[in-house]
Length: 145
Image (cartoon, rainbow, N blue to C red; front, side):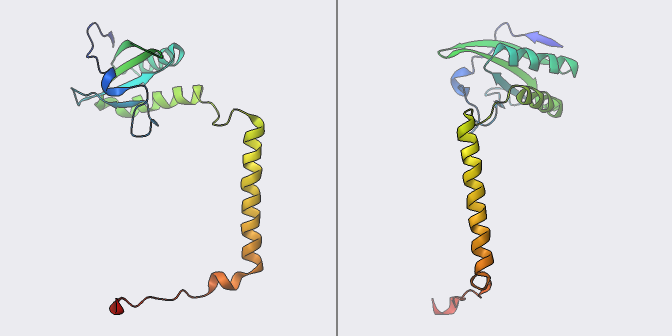
């Protein structure tokens, strides 16, 4: 099932630390073999958990480590045919290791209070002056342009 890559294609220069357009996902297509997806993880704990999830689901994969200037990147190559099971395993790992966006509790609660106040102000504004919201919008005649 699992195969440790002896001579993996060095795809790090094409992948980088963050993957995807905005760095929101941790996988992309293999640059040379389009039938494979390459998943990357930044810590050994994430990689080990992903490996155990793949093994539990009986999904074939290839594992490799890459040295980068920030540390070690753990890579997994899986066939695209088993995508549903692999994405489920990836979601389990992401859920186990997710962290809050704002780690500072004061910042987190301040943002929530601020957004709640904005919502309350918007509701009060709507309730106090509903006729402005329901006034018809002036239509522009396209023929005159």
